[in-house]
Image (cartoon, rainbow, N blue to C red):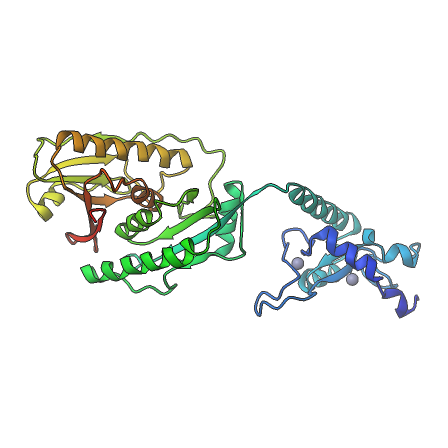
Length: 378
Ligand SMILES: [Zn+2]
Ligand SMILES: [Zn+2]
C-alpha cells in the first residue's frame, strides 16, 4: 500500500488540468462548468480530480506498475464533477482505462480547437415573452445559446436579457392590454437594448407573444443595425437553425377582387389560412391583398433565407398597395404568421413612406378579430 501522502496532487498539476479541460467535467456528455455553483452563483473550485488508474490497491482501475509521479500526472487525471467521478469509480468495468482515455482526449481536443478561434462573433441576447391565449412560453437559456452557435455566434453574456417581466398577464382581448404591453416594449427596448449595446454589437432576438406585439417590437428596434431574429421551431433545440436546411418557400400575393381607393386590408395567411369573409365580417367591404403560401402552417420557417423571401413579398405587397391606392393613409392588417416573420414585418416597415398599419388579432379561435395596436402614423 502506498501512503496517503501519495494521493496529494501537486498544485501545478491541478492548474494544468483545469487549463486543458477549460474547467468543465470531462465525462462524455456532462461538460458541466466547475468554476461556479449553478444554484448560488458563487465562484469556486467545484471540480474533482479523478484518477484514470487508481493510486491505491483496490481502487478503480488500479495497476501495480505505475509510480506516484505517473499516477498524479495530468495524463492520469480527469477533471470531473462529483457525480461523474463517483460513476466512473463505482463502475470500473463499464469505464475501463481505454474508455476514459478516449473521453479525456476528445474533451481536451474539443476545448483546444474551440478556443483556438479568437474572432468568433459575439451577440447580445434579448428575449421578449408574453402569454399567448392560454399558452405561456417557457424560456431556456441553454437553447438560446445553442441557437446562437447554430448561427456561428456565441453569447456576449451568460444569460438572456429580458424585455418586460417574465410573468406577463394573459391577453384579455381588450385594447388596454395591448396598450400596456406596447408601453412595456417601448421601455424595455430602451432599457435592455438602447442603453446597453455597444456600437456595432450584434443582437439576437428571441420573442414569443401575440403577433401584434411582435410587430410592435420589430418597429421599436427597426433603427438598430445588426439584429438577428430567431424562429421558434417547436421541437428539440427549438431555436437553432439547421445549417443544412435549404428549403425554399414560395410566397404568393393575391390581389383584391376590386381595387377600392378608400379602404385596404392585408390578410397575412402564413401560419393559418384566414378566410376573406372573416375580414369582411369584422370590418365590412374592403380591398383585401393577401400574402400566403401553398399550405399555411406554423413550421415552414426552417432557414433564414425564408425570412428574407417573406420580407421581399411583404415589401412588394406594400408597394403594390401604394401604387394601386395613392391616397391611402392606413391599412388594416390581419396576421397569422410565425414569430420571426412578425418581428421582421415591424423591422421592415418604412415609417416615412408607408401608410399606418392597424393590426388586428384574434383573441380566441372562434371569436372575431379585434383592433389592437398601430404601427407608424406618428
Ligand atoms: Zn478518483
Ligand atoms: Zn460530470
